[in-house]
Amino acid sequence: MEVKDGGPVDVLLLDSKNYLDFEEFFRGRRSSFKYFKTGSALNIMSKSYSFTIPYTDRWFIVICNEDLISGGAEPRGDVSVFIKVTVTI
Image 1 (cartoon, rainbow, N blue to C red):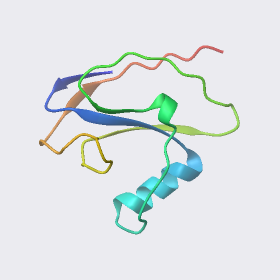
Image 2 (cartoon, rainbow, N blue to C red):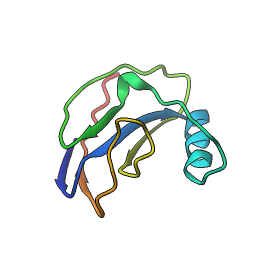
Image 3 (cartoon, rainbow, N blue to C red):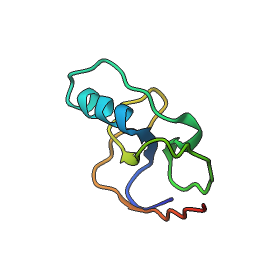
Image 4 (cartoon, helix red, strand yellow):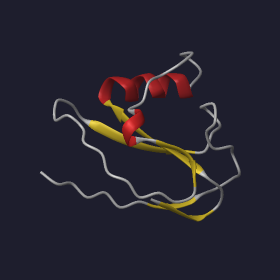
């Protein structure tokens, strides 16, 4: 993952339940949400990493710069991000 233009971002890995909780949190309807910390990164411009997720659910990658998480990215306007996902089975 690399930010091509703009400031740092948070990259969050969420399963389907936590993604729905994130949407509610983002809209101000929840006070918190959980994310898969092993597959996530906060306040970054560039990062390459790998992780293993269970096959038991649908997974979402959320790229955000909304100042939602303590220690996370602060809003700095529009951001252009390049992300490459490779799946090994």
